[in-house]
Image 1 (tube, rainbow, N blue to C red):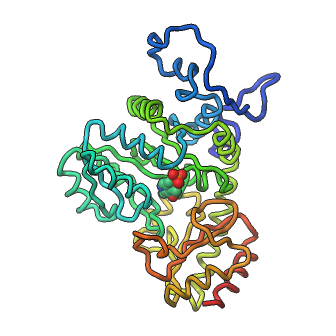
Image 2 (cartoon, protein in one colour):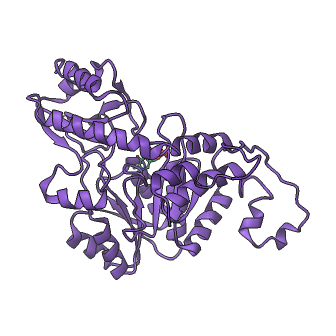
Image 3 (cartoon, rainbow, N blue to C red):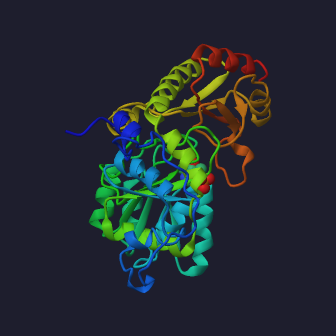
Length: 376
Ligand SMILES: *Cc1c(COP(=O)(O)O)cnc(C)c1O
């Protein structure tokens, strides 16, 4: 019998038995004693414990949990984008077309754009529009990069449907699962070849570490991604891995509370006279059933809303909160918000505020929001 995810998050990878520590050590050694000829160390598992760029026991402790949460194997990286980069390099070894989400993480779309001069053709697609995705998939071997819920308008895409489309056209399918996290959404079960994460967000959850990860059940892909990590060197620091592991242990607990708070606030905002629209997974009737099937345990910490006003009004509201921090990033235990249109290249409407809901008392948060909305 397999334990439930919240149990596995707490116990996965832990050593048991007399003298075994309840928390892993932070291993900082860059070289480990070894007598074999490194040339003979064909096995990457063996090589991992010879030199620090190839492996580290503190990463392994974190990777054991990341892998376990998705019944897969995990690889940890210096950041979400370092993870995305190595995964992208591995997947484009035998294909040169990349379909990126039209509404997807800005940094990744910039990275993809930078790679066009290296022969990778990048096309932005709307993952909700299957017909146009299919047209692009039929143009040659591709990598389809998905992100759901989208950010910042929290649209829910049919990941199982996209995986089928990709499969039919011989494409590889990746899901950036940063927003939902493995606690709410399991892309590999829905047919993705790999999940990619910025652990910087809700997975670590305390806004104190930059880190990323790739998870996959495909052994060949795993080894290619690891080879890119080994040789491109986007490795995690042992301390950062330790901090992220500490956070990951409480992910199911945090995300449950954050989802509950976020839903209550989203419903509150929906009734608010100064709010024009609220975006939250499950709110759009056309994808409500899909949202509850794909993310059955909750819709996550992130929501966004458009004020009945202009960008300047949204700026005043963001600046007026007492509890909610005015900051980018999301997924932490502390609530934060920002006006998205302040970012270059962001297509969000001028009055859209993205709110990441934390674990504070929800009545306090609602009172803070109501008071800030008076600045409108
Ligand atoms: C933040 C983020 C990234 C990039 O992660 P870093 O850890 O900042 O490199 C990638 N994808 C999504 C969806 C993100 O939110």
